[in-house]
Amino acid sequence: MGGYRLAVDYGTSNTVAMLATPDGRVRPLLFDGAPLLPSAVYAQPDGIVLTGRDAQNSARLDPARFEPNPKRRIDDVEILLGEHSWPVVELAARTLARVATEAARTAGGPPAELVMTCPVTWGPVRRDVLTRAAARAGLPRPTLVPEPVAAAAYYTSVLGQEVLGGRSVVVYDLGGGTFDVCVVRREDTGFHALAYRGIDDFGGMDLDALVVAQLAQAVAPGAPEAWRRLSHPADAADRRHFRALWDDARTAKEALSRQSHATVFVPVVERDAHVSREAFEQAASGALRRTIDVTLATLREAQTGPADIAGLFLVGGSTRVPMVATLLHRATGIAPTLLEQPETVVAEGALRAVPGVMSAAPAPSRPTTPPPGRSPAVGLGAPGPGTARGVASPVPPGTAPPVSRPVPSPPRPSANPLTGPVLGAVMLALGMLTLLVTPNAATHERWLFLGCAVGSALFCAGGVLSWFWRGLPLLARFGVPAVHLLLTVYWFTKIWDLALALKLSPSFVGAPAWILAGVTTVLFLLTAATLGVRRREPAVGRPR
Image (tube, rainbow, N blue to C red; front, top):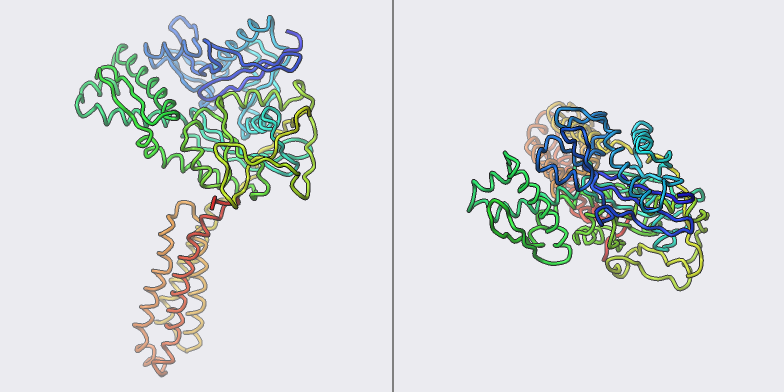
């Protein structure tokens, strides 16, 4: 298969492989008629390891022999399947061997080159697992490309979107088992990852679980025993029904991206149940908003402004859920770009990122003024007036789109997000202590005014710093001025005692208390005024 190149995206839930011919054409390899090969494995008692849909179907026989996501357990070294432990590298190799067999069948021989993708944060040990798995599968030594870099290469070369030097693409990747977001900047040497964050315990499977929960609400009250058998299968028949239920739940979730309702036949219970997009989105909103928060935090870390963002690119099959694009558009003001088959983006982008399919071109210089004829953002809907536009104009017809070289650089280390809140809490405590002790310990009016000034300064500074804790609800910020109000009232109760102790007039002694009252008023006004500012804190603008 001289000149043929193979790219493999070994994913948490599915594996995708793309084959490039010597003339530059790229096509997906098909497994059981589909471009997605489940990454699952099943170890039979005779030692044969089944892969893909064969593994998923066999899981109904004995779940203990089934591993749906070997990539998620790459740090475990070995996985127990049935009575035997299997090295993770061997299980990955079985899936890659399936890919190698299909590639050889399609093109008539083994590939001349192999490109594989991996998460941008993977270090040498994890990358070596992929390299050794490829060798065990009979494939060439792979060139490894970070997944966000591959997605950005697809964005420029396949979609023809121009990303000028110094501008960035935000890659939002919601897969079957995990969520990742990365800001990738175009530089003279290629694409570089500026900032990267992820959620390891959330993905499409968790959205499937929300559909199953809807089904439980519909049928469990009327058939509790049947639902117990279905949700906690004890024999092979119930396990088959359990697997069928989850497969149908996933199908219903995908159908809800195109229609407002879906119907699922619930086995064992033996009845149809209906799920609605409205109820599904209501249940999913909390988890999806969590991915939006992570995306905004990544943009802040990358210090990327609206003018620096060339596009917001959605990859991963779970990004088909309409609410994902809606929430992202509302939060960033950028119209996301979503494809019909987002699962294949990373694999094909890996081929485009590595020289061979096309020659790599340097990033075009960024003009000081926008080029004429610039087209509006391409995506799920154009942003409204005054918002940042997320996609630059396409490359003119007849010109080779720029393709970047992968530069697998790790993301920049980020500061500890708890530093500000912890420091704020310490300053709050010191300020409170100072304001509580001063009225009882002051022996001169000088110390009275000094304690008032120092205590209020520490308290206000600590309160402002505490606002930057991500987990603090917006309205909870009013707790800072509320506590300061209580301290002010405390000072007013001490006016007469202080006047007698210091032999001063009550009006003079009451001056610090009135100063505290003024500070309290300013704190309340500042808190109310900055609620909206805090929402606009990310480096991208909201749609107006």
